[in-house]
Each structure stands twice: as structure tokens, then as C-alpha cells.
Length: 244
Image (cartoon, rainbow, N blue to C red; front, side):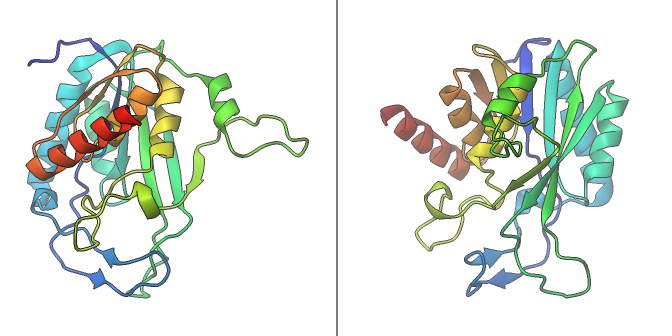
């Protein structure tokens, strides 16, 4: 069904990073478990195609946002420039760039760059009256003041890459989705920029993390995903959570 324009309170998007094309496996990695470089057909574009794709989906998302809506976009240094330009061209204002520091970053294989241990989450707003639940973020912030009081949430978030039971694996032990995000990360975003009963959209739904967190926080949600294997996993995860 068509999503109505000006109907969405919050969008979280984790689009392709355009990092595929070369295979790199560390099946015996001891620091963070088996590591496989993202190498998926849906993540392989030439540059002009990727720029056009980025411009197109951000334009469609902007149309769906309410005038006070927010959109958070996950990215790396490879794509942050294209995302910021596309968003600004569509009238969105960049409020913050959140830095996710991965405390269990994968080892530096080439030893020719600084170790890659961060991803970015660009927070754009659609208009001047955006929602930001400052006090609620202080409550869930795991960092406290020296006296143990609640502390304001900064734009630097330290959190490990998913491991253990939250990470979804196939029968071969490999992660089903190469960039599955921690539920805690989505919790911060949804608490920051939406309220109960608001409508949240994830246009790259993957294995359904946004839907799971939205339901737990009593938000309504819409997820869009074209990969049948991801859809199957997302449905199973969401149904399982509802039965817990």
C-alpha cells in the first residue's frame, strides 16, 4: 500500500554502504568471532548509480515525513558525503552526526590505515519544530555523573558490534545480515525523536530490528524490505518477540 505523504513521525534508514565487491574472510578471528566483509549483490553499485539511488530514496522519505519529522541515516565515511548532500538538496536540516564507537572493532587487516571502529548516524529534521526527548535520553544513558545522577546523552555512543544471542546466524554460523544493528542503538534513536503511538518507518528493514524496538516502546511502525530471506527472518523474530 502507498504510504501517505506527511504521515511519518520518524524514519530510521540503514541503506547499502556500497562497500561490496571484494571478498575478505576471517573465519578464525578471535577478537569478535568470525568476520566476513560485506559482499552482497544489493550493496554493489558504480558511483553514479549509488548517488542517484541515494538521492531518490531520500527524496521519497522526505515526502513521507511530517513537518516536524526526523530521519536518522546510518553510514560510514565512504558514503556520508553523498548522504548529507542528498538530504540537504531535499530540504532536510542536519542536526547531529552521531558517532557509534564499536568497542569490539574488527582487527586492522591491511595495517595501512587507522583501525576502522566507528560508524555515523546522521540526524536530519524536516522543519523547525522537531521532537527531541532530552530528559528521556538522560534516563536511559548508561553514563552517569560523578555523583551518580542522570547525564545528558552525547553524540558519541560506545557500544559493541552485535555478538551472542542477539546476532542472527544461519545454519553455517555466519551472520544472516552483515550490518544488523544493536537493539540498544535503535532504542536511543526512537526514544530521542518519537513518542508513544507515533509512526516509525524503516525503508531498509533487514531482519526487523526497528520493528522489534518500536513495538517494545509502543510505537507504530512500517518496514520495507525486498530480500525474501530477510523478510522471513524479520517475521520470525517479531512473532517470537510477541510471544515472549
